[in-house]
Image 1 (tube, rainbow, N blue to C red):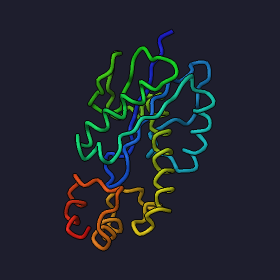
Image 2 (cartoon, rainbow, N blue to C red; image 1 turned 30 degrees about the horizontal axis):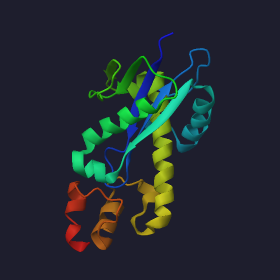
Image 3 (cartoon, rainbow, N blue to C red; image 1 turned 90 degrees about the vertical axis):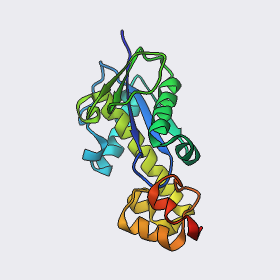
Image 4 (cartoon, rainbow, N blue to C red; image 1 turned 90 degrees about the horizontal axis):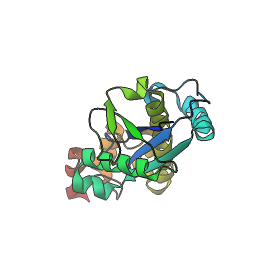
Length: 189
């Protein structure tokens, strides 16, 4: 049997927080209904699917790149690094990785990229859902630490409310200083 790991990331666009990835090897004998791009599912649907993915997948793992890494090597390279970490953390070695998008992480196994793979490839969709739920949960926890920024609502994305909070309070340690809207507020910090 050839094990294919679906891989996706969540969190390239936000101004704050880590970029989180997941890698999933689905079990062909235990299909999961309802897999789709995590952005096309409600939070309730994603939460339900995470439980099913964790129960039915042959293997899954998470990877991440922290804010300092994002600022040091840029968000694309940090996303690829986080994907590599997820694939290398799988408890079962994958024979191939199928990645959402058009950029591939450097892996020791063959990699295929799929534009809109999170909507068309079930294993990538599963990875998208795991990564989204993990990152959103983390931002909800971090909101308790930094309540001024509204991470519980926008999860770090550059909404008008988030940019206004940045301008009012300056960046917190979760903010990506290499991102323009954050750089513009550094004089307030």
